[in-house]
Image 1 (tube, rainbow, N blue to C red):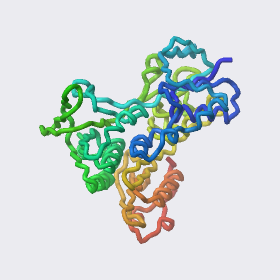
Image 2: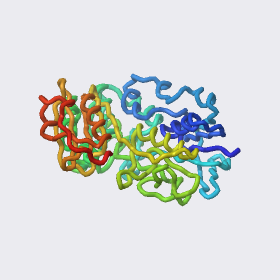
Image 3: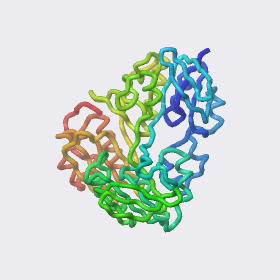
Image 4: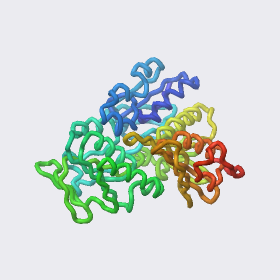
Length: 411
């Protein structure tokens, strides 16, 4: 019997394999991962794992015995060289030719690296994406070491928080006019800038990296776009990711900011599906790609059902989080297209929430150490309800008493 093959043994791939079994599929399943370890969590890599607060085996999504016990053949340390879409055949790097009943591409996303011309090939220059990255850079986190972080998105800020917490001297550069420029409002960026500066992180906004220079093959200095030069002991590059579409693109599948799928996760090739960071899918009349653990799990489980003929259209309910120092940021919804941000103080010191509106409609919110605001906002967004903005801004009005607008189309 031909197996269902899942390419990519990350969060989406692991969830998809488990869901196939939970839904009653009794045929062979092969879960193929390029890394030499079982599926694991990625978010703690730039947080608790680097801080030394989480042991390696606690990163694993499931006990190593889970896969064999559930008849899932876990193939680690193996790359897929090519996909023959029409025949549903995978060619592995070791020369194995694997004919499949169906294939799910859960190939994730890859970090954007500095080109060698800018010094990206020097020793001591790291990206943060996988377990090998975290373990390679961990010895660099010595008290007093000078680290340059390139990129002011959430990965860069989380790495800065870990480094500052361990006593390193941290400089973060962001070439955009402010940190979090692509993902959050000015109010949220200002809140986090102040948080990091209170921990002695030097943030240089509107400043890019011109070049890294080194000695004996290892980075030692960075020249910035404003002409200044700083001495560094190591560098972390967090300038974004690209969806892992290389395999799909070479096989002739349609690519559209990721592997293009329909609402069931089906790609342009019959019998081939995609889920997780690599997949773009229809959402609210447009097409999006979500890089988050909740989406990876939910979309993968929806795709598993579709592969077995039990599918319903996948409806994303986006939510995200970030941990920095003692702050938990929780995000619900998507803020694209907002025209107003309402700031609401939290009910305890240091807590606050920022609510994004397009006209009267609530789109999203950022909640800093304010789980009550987060849960309230998430429920409202998913129900298509919007609070009255002036009332929302008044902390004297309890969240549960906010006047609501007429229902609108739910996210």
